[in-house]
Image (cartoon, rainbow, N blue to C red):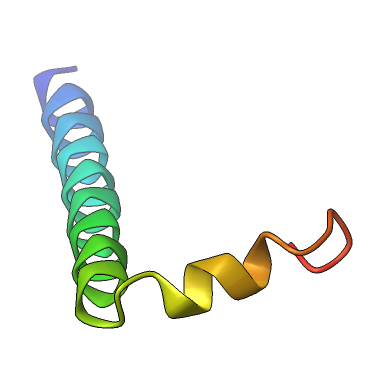
Length: 48
């Protein structure tokens, strides 16, 4: 029972860490390009 819990917790933390790192990378690119690529995505709903 505890092995299942620890495996689930480990995977949940790995996924959370991956999402956090991806958010940091996207924010870094946004700052680096001064929002140029993000403004291109704001054109319409279909472009998103």
